[in-house]
Figure (cartoon, helix red, strand yellow):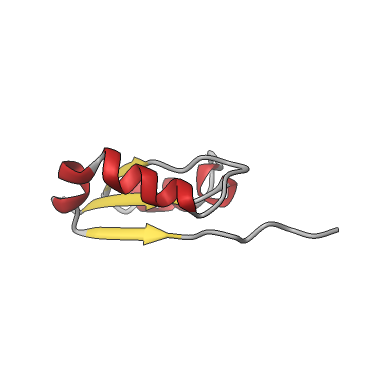
Length: 69
């Protein structure tokens, strides 16, 4: 089983988004995303979850993708 870590904003936190697709493909997903936060939040989660992230097969990260109306 592939271990995937998601780091990002609300685009990764959506219930039926990329997280669901990865799980449906047989991946074990740890979603550390938090909506409405800056990119520095990703660094905080990397430091806080260092051991888990070091064991991940894949890390997907995204930041600063806020929509402008």
